[in-house]
Length: 165
Image (cartoon, rainbow, N blue to C red; front, side, top):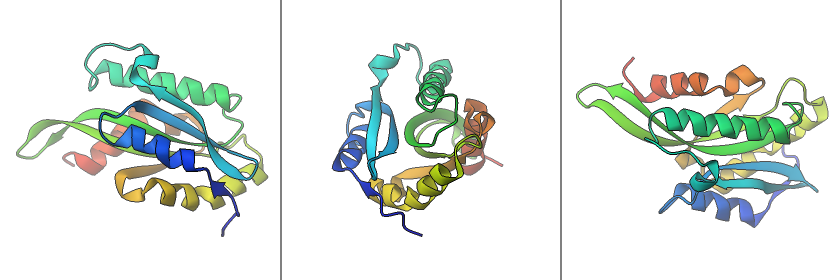
């Protein structure tokens, strides 16, 4: 089902700044406004003001700041958003030991507290934004509550996909 929602060209431009080259952004939050997916916030690593090994505690700290930003922008997870986050983590791999990995995750945030209408619009518009971003570069997760958006939850899912089982 198509919602007729368009994707603003800035969405793709901003995503390229997160996914390519020197990776200017650490995360981007998108919202639907006036029947168009737009960039609501694009945050750099420097803006997070976190130092240390990006694949250790600072990765968790960066993600926690991202979650706090999402919660603030959605009035405590009562509104929907899309987001992409440059997730840095380590996992064990057969024959490779511990590997540092860098994966872009796409979060379709449709919390239980959001209105049915909003959830339907965001669900039916997800294909348009994913096509704009280029789904080959990203892993998608659907989030309906705060527990599904925890660092530990995503780390476990990424570990299942890329680590030893």
